[in-house]
Image (cartoon, rainbow, N blue to C red; front, side):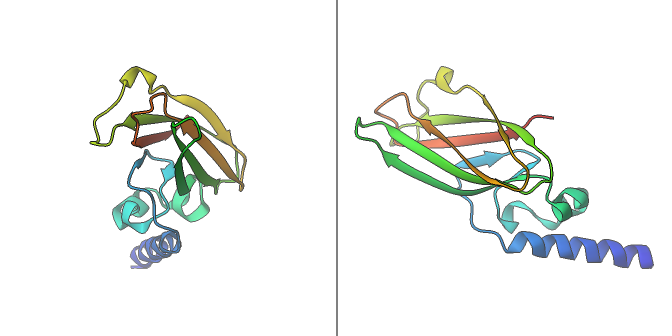
Amino acid sequence: MKKTMCILLLSGLAFLAGCGQGSPDPRVGTSEGVGTATPGDNPVINIVRHPISDLFGDAIDILDVDTRTNNAGFYEVSVRAHNRSHKIIKFEYRFRWVDKDGFPLDSQGSVWKLSSAQPGLGFYFSGVAPFKEAANFKLDVRPIK
């Protein structure tokens, strides 16, 4: 009985910790160890599976995504994120550019880029589309283990 109560309590605390975070951008896809800062992407089943990471913050949260078209006419993306871990997290990211109809543009240009985040700090990373036809993007982020 005590074990069940403890599991329920930890699950509830982890779920509530995820509820206070902002809404993600649907264009951002993340893998385990990278969060999108929303309880919708962090369901109870996931919290039960990963209680230590969720309680102690061993992940990167994507907080905000800004876009613009620069003076040269190319689409730009700036991503604001936060490392809620107590250690440096190395990760990779890639932008996949799409046209106004959502059709992918040049998949060879979508290469994984290596980056890292200092413990407990916010950081930015960005990308510029290689084509003026780019009107949107998909972002993939994955941790390096």
